[in-house]
Length: 124
Image (cartoon, rainbow, N blue to C red; front, side, top):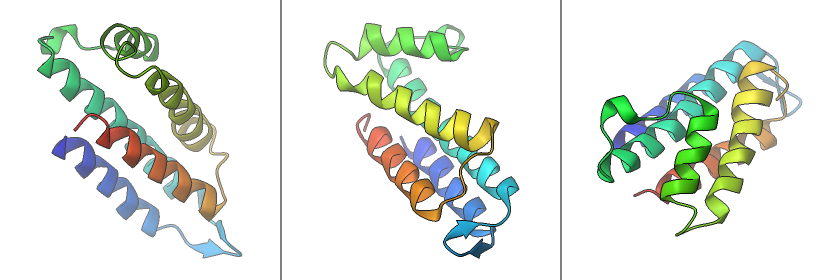
């Protein structure tokens, strides 16, 4: 879990480089990079959990669909809300934040990062 939290901390450090004007990030490049790193933190947390359940590194998911299936198989029984939270973070951090570069509001990005931390801590 330390590795996932380290990634999340790195994402926050990247975000600090982004200039803020009127409660908006003025340079989307840093926001995209930070959101991508935060999303990787989520995947790291899931990987660590799956390894603890006996999967080998070769068996770890390699696509978002494979992560969904792994969450359903190994975690949905214990926590049905986890898959929904993963979907939200995928949409917010990976798609809107990283891929499309659509996140500009400081408050929205910070909330997404808080949600990522809460998600990661559920695996600890």
